[in-house]
Image (cartoon, rainbow, N blue to C red; front, side, top):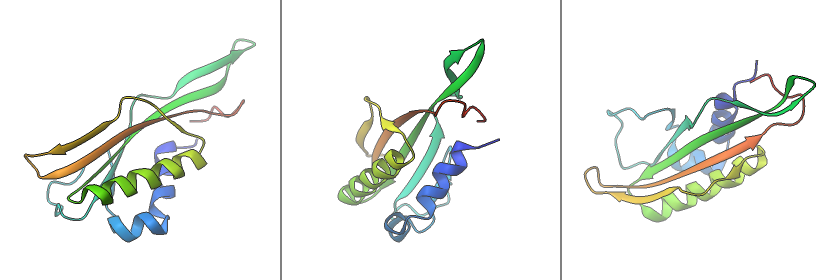
Length: 129
């Protein structure tokens, strides 16, 4: 069985541009409250479970997956650069960006946040997620 969460994580983790800035601070689902907040970090969350996208002859032929990626950090431009790089890498994995993201400054924690959602429909017969 394939795990898209791990595939996305590995794609981000092995990218030199991202690693230079986040220094390994890529997390699943949530960040560690003990992390220092100056260095930016990335959070990968499934937005929903994989769902059947295409049927044929009474069986699933393709799967639709949606993931949310958040970038948070103290420097707005750095957050934007990371979000753009993630967008490029997600495109390489076959994901397209969806509308209704989030671009905010979180005053209570003094961080900028850029949240984007990405969706992919797998190739035919690629349903082992």
